[in-house]
Length: 328
Ligand code: XIL
Image 1 (spheres, rainbow, N blue to C red):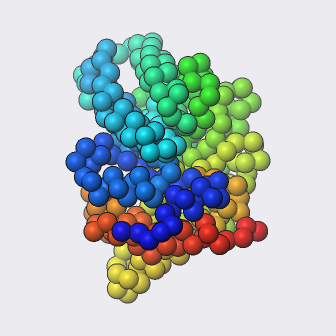
Image 2 (spheres, rainbow, N blue to C red):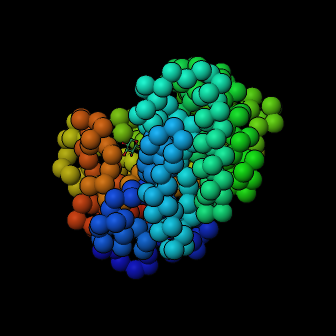
């Protein structure tokens, strides 16, 4: 267990939000998980519960049980909530595979989904990742089902529909691999600029920052954050995790954890320097992380707490930075 003061209190003293992605299952069954979550984090993102697939078991049916469990637990413990996500190409409902929809039916489905879901949580969540991962790695628009049916305007509509029912909620575009300045973040910069020119109600951009195979240089992340903030958009780090493999670093595990801590520290400093007030890590303990099941070659220890519920060097690095760092 971590020492006093708690990470969330250190963060709050600095008007900072330190978050974790949260799953519904351990909230029902795992007291240690819940203890870390409520004591150390003042912000949560639903890891899967608010995605379209889990919410829509059938065409005209919603199942809000897991989503309510995550959101209600967070509110009870005075945590800010990020909802994730309304329009994405992954984790769509399984029955989509068999559905012979027309473009118009898919658009109607998305409208209903956004109205119902964003409307239901309007007073309980603070931010929505309205659209997730609409840009491909080469900077072209990702050719997904929404884009096929509606073209680029699917983004405009999703944000407008969300704004119609949840005008107080901050509405974000969220993506990975676009953390530093690169071809993909250039394309996202152009995309959100076009949306702003069209009057789309977008409030911010989420940088996922899965620092797994590559770790974007902190200076490049800072430069990227600056240009989005110059568009008058908020920027948050929304899904951070950091993996150093034995291949990257032949030293022992402790050496890798120190390196990992230094990367978390550097990104926390970027946040404080550049006016980013929220940093979310993608899971609570290493044993809760998605990484080892998704990427065979990566170590499964990308987070702030180890599988035995103890804080790692990365936890202490973030806490110390929030306690002592003087921004540029
Ligand atoms: C991941 C979850 O962590 C996994 O549990 C799930 O099986 C797949 O999705 N980018 C995102 C997140 O925006 O929604 C993904 O979450 C990780 C990558």
